[in-house]
Image 1: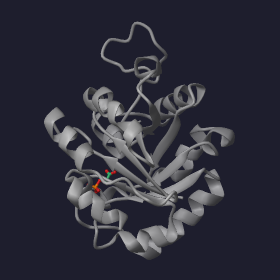
Image 2: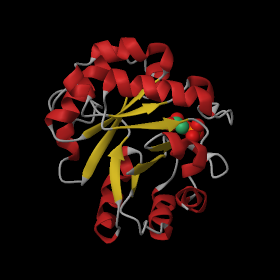
Image 3: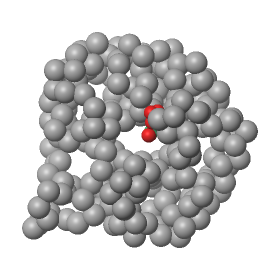
Image 4: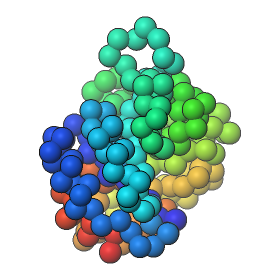
Length: 219
Ligand code: PGA
């Protein structure tokens, strides 16, 4: 299985998202899985389209570390029940950097996700790979998709050299024994093939915003 994860971050309006999903040609092959991670505000709208699309699933970009309750502003697993969300991105470096998320909070989010049958897409960088792994128990790690996202490659156009990716992906497979390992960081139609050859897929930011560009990654 090859995963193609479209992380829209804080981009796209409702109208743009509707256009995106209408223009998406879902893969013919059962070995390609598209995962769209829209902002929370667009999840309900996109979930209406999923039944017509083959091999396309939804993720949320984040999750409250707490269960349902008095946590103003936080989106709990209960809030997304019934919205056909299957995956949740946790621990993205932008969350760690701008929102000061700690390893412990990331672990709480993974716990929330797994308790409610959501598959975590756990983002890590080689610098804190071991600290991250220690924060999660091995059984939890084995239920995650792990995304290797080198900081300097994200949003910079400086995609990581393939030799480094091979090395870190191997380390992640050994330490975490996850469901799958994907690479993220300036992936585009020109460079995607080399990453697909050595990983289980890609996590794509900038090149996922236009459906035409994202679709090129699949071919
Ligand atoms: P990018 O983002 O493709 O724009 O580098 C990747 C990511 O942040 O997951």
